[in-house]
Image (tube, rainbow, N blue to C red):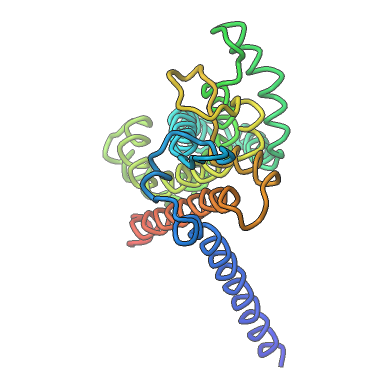
Length: 290
């Protein structure tokens, strides 16, 4: 009796989850595709156009390339900075630090994961933006400020996943390496890191997914200027920042509103791509092959 109730409860949860995902995908896709199928906006102009003038009286423009570029730029730059730091911290915690150090560092890293985005945004607004303004000139609200904030935000995610993947490796790997005469560092970079690499890359992709979808913290420090930047110290906008700023100011069903839904559809598709990459990396794990 208890087993039957548990089975039906589990099936109900799975069905409910699938229904929610299906409904959300259909809703966002139907709204986002209306820009092209109903309003007649060219997909080419939307993806590659650089003019965003949705409220122009005679010739409105819906070029979202500057926002797409901003999202990818801030994501790739933050991941490039955060990955070496995160993997290094994970190696230190898993292989170098004494157990007492790991017992202290691990909860600290996990605590950083749970800090709300607005707190990171306030830190960026109070510390990073003035530092950029005083050091490099300008307003301080720029791509570099957004990159630094996101680097700090995704560092705990990548570190936690990398640490868990290194700790999950069988102890026999290290013993075999030491038995062959390898030093600690040779064992780390020739045995442990290559073996745990798919799981570490999964952490990197998770960090990218968080960086690409982050809205509030980035919006607070990036400047929200609707144009392509000439340098990392120029203000830009991202897909998430333009959505949070303008969605509430539009009328449902208008071309302007549908164009914003098209940006939301891009974010959804990118989430699917990130999940697909994580699934591929999971299948490629050497631990799963044994």
